[in-house]
Image (cartoon, rainbow, N blue to C red; front, top):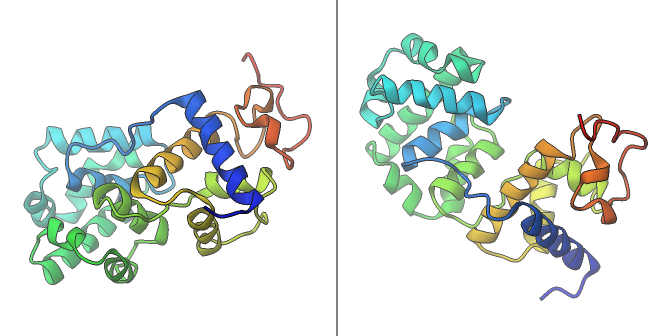
Length: 231
């Protein structure tokens, strides 16, 4: 165990969030393919929109590898319209499937079964996939021990006084990996808990500080911004 106050703080935040929210059961998805597609669709949009898009794909019998590979890109864009930025996201999904087809003979399980660090380097070269999307695929679909970082993670850990406000993705990921208990299950649950906190309480503007489950350890919260309580 690391003898460092940051380790203790990061664990305290996890424990408080788990006590407040309980298990988050994240990422929702019946298959690996659904999780992978969801990881692309959730870019810059709320999950409720992603769910509508995924439901539309299911209703049209298109949440299948071969169906997605062969569907016309413009048709795919129409089906995923609820997820917003639908034309761009359709292109990204087709780009990812083309990569899997070319390098893994269309076998998603094969792509996720190998050395995850090597797979990560490959996936980051696929058009339209950034580190958050790639790491979501590796963690949630591949069950690999990689910590997913998003805007919520950076915002919360800054307000907790643990990182600089402008920390980049890699720096934030290295911090969470170093000071969290290691393992796929912990990384999975912690990311989901931070998303829950960021979405419900630790908002970018007008955070609901009075009801926040980690308010007692927050040192960089905006002042006078919790007047939405009770609305």
